Image 1 (tube, rainbow over the protein chains, first blue to last red):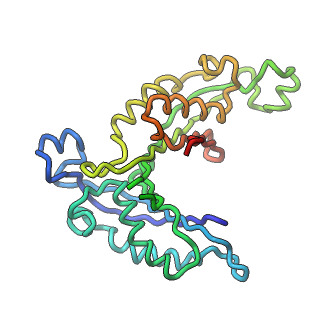
Image 2 (cartoon, rainbow over the protein chains, first blue to last red; image 1 turned 180 degrees about the horizontal axis):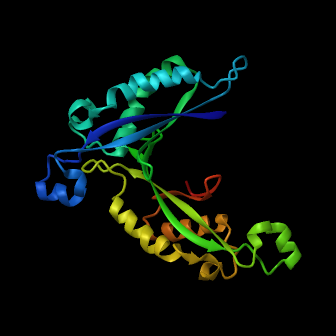
Length: 139
Length: 137
């Protein structure tokens, strides 16, 4: 089995806020990320799939196809958007890097499962070069 | 839902790869330029990967300022701008990056709740890095 990873980037704004909490508690827990005016990042999305290289093409998946799926399912939805207001997953949950990784996984899962023998194993999202979150499909 | 949170830190330190178990000639052969008696240094990157359920209230696996504080206290304050050979952990152990990675992993694992620390990666340069994982996972 071989793992293959493809990167893409998107830029988006967000803020962290839990509606069940007071302003004071939001500011205490989330710090500067609780600024309601929002702030933004250049995110890097890494998608890893695993499979056996095709005996004819030598590909685990066609990288151009994977690139198109990532763009269609994730980048086009997240890029240059305000995650809290414009991406439905984050209407009720906080758009942390962890939750962005899970949202990206869910958006990719079906598209990859139906059209490829490779299996989605990992979605990693870098919020900055020093901060990232990863989801591996675990419950 | 279980996810992983990763954070990268930088520290600069010097070391010399040398063991008293080998002769001077054998040390030179085993460690090459890294055996230079005057030592040399690196900008190390320490990558810490913490696993666990996402708290529904915060959307987070771990409180990043608390993680930063732990890593600063146990790792960065100890090793940054230091000579690794002089640290008590390396009195009888060669400060290879394998051993540094293991030392960082053990220091952090002992401070965190069981099973939370998933992996530690230490990058010695852009071209070589080492990783320790919890063998129980």
